[in-house]
Length: 481
Ligand code: NAD
Image 1 (cartoon, rainbow, N blue to C red):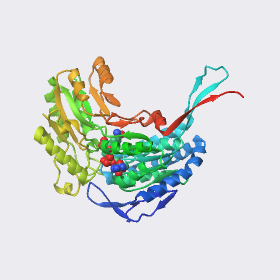
Image 2: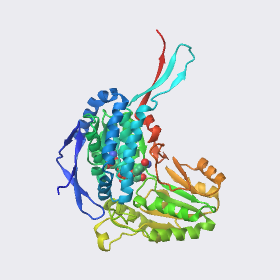
Image 3: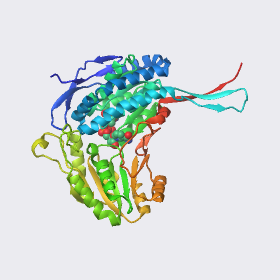
Image 4: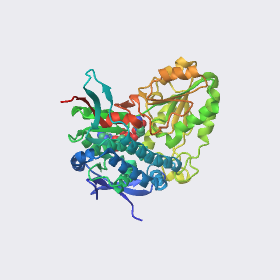
């Protein structure tokens, strides 16, 4: 069997790469493909193609653009299992999660196809009786899209689909650790007949390909998802040429468990939020503040749950937690947890698994900490792995103050049966997404998604909110001659 190569897609052509590097399965170390290495020249060719295609695509009826999205969704739905398997092999998440994600990507395409038949502007009553006063949304132009590896099907889709339906063209840079997975979306759009140049993909390092996109004068806007550090660097560079910028960045998501919570559901939701996708979710649960009277029993149950998780190869149906995405990521997480262990108590996991089949991949046990200082690295910085810490709190005020104490404000959850407490939490917690009695992760396709302060910048993504970033508004005064 030949190994597939993640190639560039420029001006409607799949371009054979010069240099390539290995694409490795983090679950067993097997080389499953090759990844093109590109640079500024390929980015320039992609941007030029996107500029040439811009007016033709923008001038189509929105329903014609929607047809392409729907047909691509048909292709993807016919192969969600196969797509999920590729995702699992490329970046490690268990097949059960990967299947859900690939189905979700198709659902995102269908939602945005529906935007063709929803309003693109608003009409207002003018102060002048004869005047029709309204707004009209038009495309921004060429969108540069930079995506991470942790949701390699869903994130490229939730950026590309709104960019396309609102009439923009795009240059996409997929993350190395899951580029083959992301390219399935492009193949589906290609099969669905998207015109040449409307979407272009360049595969290569972030510091070369990503940076060249951010600095290119032919790119009008950058939509980025990734770490806060990279996002801030992009904002600085992109603002030099006054580009429109949307950043979805890291998270450090808190959960509050009140005395009146349904304890077992809170434990289950925290375990799911902390350890699904091996904790490699921006919305993963990292900090849990538990009412003092429940603290011991909550911690004990969480440790039992974490210790009993079936860590294994993602394609095994019984696996509950797969490997981390690569050696570098695993080493970084383990080192950070070693530092945390010096400051607090590690109850389980947190170490590399090396016995038997584990030796071939990037496996570690899910970690639960207690007794960490509130100003420790763990309590303040995102450690992007399967790790969570628990602290006792004395009342709601303390719990909310602690929950709000980091510079990330993405997602937050409370477990309670008390309506007043839930309402107070919704009003006071600093987060772009709030859950009451459900885990911190999760995003439905038709509603806004995004963080505040250190977690997000610019308009939110997904749902109808996406129109804000991917269009510009004209206000029109129409008077009779
Ligand atoms: P990352 O910041 O390392 O990389 C993200 C993307 O940016 C990759 O495609 C990378 O190649 C590219 N990149 C790297 N350096 C660049 C540069 N100098 N210029 C332009 N592009 C560059 O992040 P990651 O490790 O791929 O993903 C994990 C991070 O993403 C975590 O912090 C996680 O919380 C965050 N994330 C956030 C959300 C959200 O919606 N808020 C969703 C998923 C992941």
